Amino acid sequence: WDWRYYAERVRKDMYDFDQSQLKPYLSLEKVTESAMAVSSSLYNLRYVKRPDIVSYHPDVDTYEVRQTQSDGTDELVAIFIHDNYARQYKSSGAWMSEYRSQRKIISPNSDPVERIPIVSNNNNFAKGKHTLLSFDDARTLYHEFGHAHHGMLSNATYARLASTNVLTDFVELPSQLMEHWLKQPEVLKKYARHYETGDVVPDELLQKLKTAESFNQGFATVEYTACALLDMAVHQIEDYSNFSLSKFEAEELARLGMPEGIVMRHRPAHFQHLFSTSHYAAGYYVYLWAEVLDADAFAAFKEAGDVFDPETAARARKYIYSAGNTAPPDELFRLFRGRDPKIKFMLEKKGLIGDSNL
Image 1 (cartoon, rainbow, N blue to C red):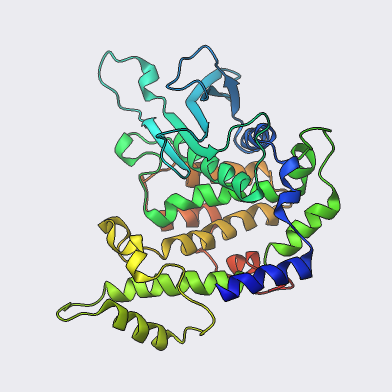
Image 2 (spheres, rainbow, N blue to C red; image 1 turned 180 degrees about the vertical axis):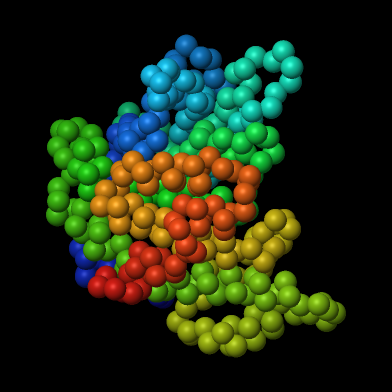
């Protein structure tokens, strides 16, 4: 608690940046428009709103997702459902769901539309006359849009191998990769407009956002990594007779050399990844490894000299978004990048190496 209190004071003193200053420029309408524009620029997708399609709630927007083939024909790629507002009985958080996964094999005499995925993004924004998002909320919308791409662009023969049916670290690559485009100046300068005046977000505010982005990343990385390492260590114990979790925690953190001023992000007693399901057993590390993958993948676009480079986007679509579980994920990454992932891009993104402020 002390660290967070003083870190916030230092952040305000050093960077003079308050995220609430950005909210008037991040309306839900414009952020959604920008995400769809990024999707169109990268993957040639068009979002056609279909208010005539009856959905499960009046607040839900339904779209046909279409693309133009190389021969000029128009093709339906997916149905996309955007469920953005919080409401009574709706689950909390944000997530992507599929009401039907993409597949090429369907039952004889079935309607060919059965091959088309039906994908939804679900958020919990407060509905109002003007729904204004924090930058973190806007990042969440982009994150879930990346998951939606994974479902909509899937190109597998069998539904069981399609879309997000991949290893956990690889499932976060499409979503976290999409987040990078929200921060691009060409996107923000076009779509981050004041909800009342239509004025473009000031350059000074964007510079403050960029400068403050890497603040306190050392703390955040340590508190997360400590949880990931303890998670793996506790699952390697062979005999739990007379086991004391609190004693194990203290001894393991001492062995790791945990700084006294930093605590684990999740103490073991409420660390749901440890106990909720076997899916995440010894698997909390995957989010950080996915950051290694997404930072390296986005570096490919920067190295091409254009964050919308068509050739790089085509490789990302083929090997990251479309392949599903039809090939091992390490092989798919090598096909996209031409090599194994490198950690340096994640460290640069966090400001832990290079010229960025720590």
